[in-house]
Length: 219
Length: 219
DNA sequence: GACGATTTTCAGTGATTCACGCAAAACAAC
DNA sequence: GTTGTTTTGCGTGAATCACTGAAAATCGTC
Image 1 (cartoon, rainbow over the protein chains, first blue to last red):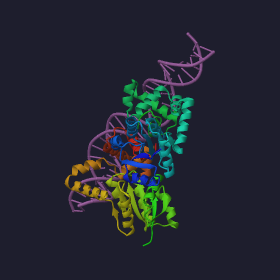
Image 2 (image 1 turned 135 degrees about the horizontal axis):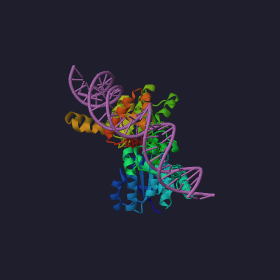
Image 3 (image 1 turned 90 degrees about the vertical axis):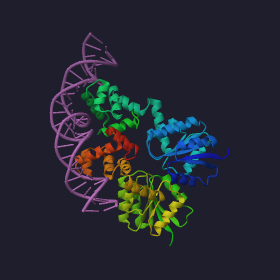
Image 4 (image 1 turned 120 degrees about the horizontal axis):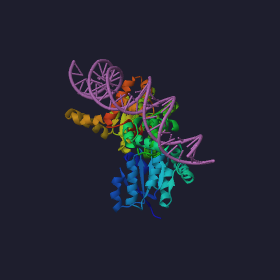
């Protein structure tokens, strides 16, 4: 197999330079493109295709997931390797579902990065150890009892409570929730109280975070 | 003048590796320490002092400013070079006031980085062109068109507001925040109101999400 | 159908927070 | 010293929270 054609996407030029430098003494990896965003990269791929796109994300932004999805659908032959500088299982899994074939975290090093690129080029997926644990956990849970999060909410929260929680975490006021569900504001309050008690949450900030973590609402 | 003894602070190991790699063929710069945080670095400096500490920040966090200030006061002979991956004139200026002697942005490159380090070692300050432009632009705008800069400024949060937002999104009640910051509960309320207005957020749920998205708190 | 368990509904009460407006003191820039 | 911003704080009425209690609806099951 010939050289591996790589594209680098990172909002910070210095980081792109750093990665390029780290990969400099790996001659079988050739960096063809280096852009700020996936959007900038896509047009370049038509005349100069690559095998692998490595993109770095610094914050968990739903837009990034959408961009990865878009890239994967537009260029089905490229393999996307995501490096995320945050540690949100949620989003990492979303990236994988969006079509990413590999994933690294910010505590990776040159060797792991090269290994990831080579692995992807050979047609296999690559997930950093820190990620593997996560995926394994998730998979096991899904196989045996749907999702952990699902178990958590469905075993502990009732249907109505879930409805209220969703609306609340979607930035609706109690009054709005009450109107939407044709119940009184006091009932909404009760549900929220019960949710907090059941899940052992202290504040409603915790409630919002719970909802996000469990995919009840988008960030 | 002998070798320049440098310490590197960055929350992301891969970035530290990248920078180290970029500086590898500049033999007069010697990287002695490489840590996650300034806090981790400080004890090392007692037995192994350096000339320059280069620290990278990804989000505008008042605590980072405080850490830089602390570092500058504890080790008055070290010179701090800040690289900020965001573009908030506000915070860049604060870093300078906190004692940083140089400043780079994420669109810097190896040469500029080396230049900055050498300049600092020679006893002069160094500010990247992009920074100078920023400051100049800001200055001009303020002089000629107040509205524009006002609008811009209103989208940014002040130090205090960021502190309040962080604590709030970290599940603290207003009372707790007030106690922690030694201000009244009413002041906390004011800050929260101002934040919502500045960021054009409707509810506190939105505020929590904003904080998570911007990495001010963990999920 | 009857029974118990759970869910859903709602209210009282006092504390806390929200939303909006206003303003003095502190601070920084010029 | 003047100007503008930030930080601090208060007043008011509405909304929400935290806690308790409780009636009505629903569900599983014998």
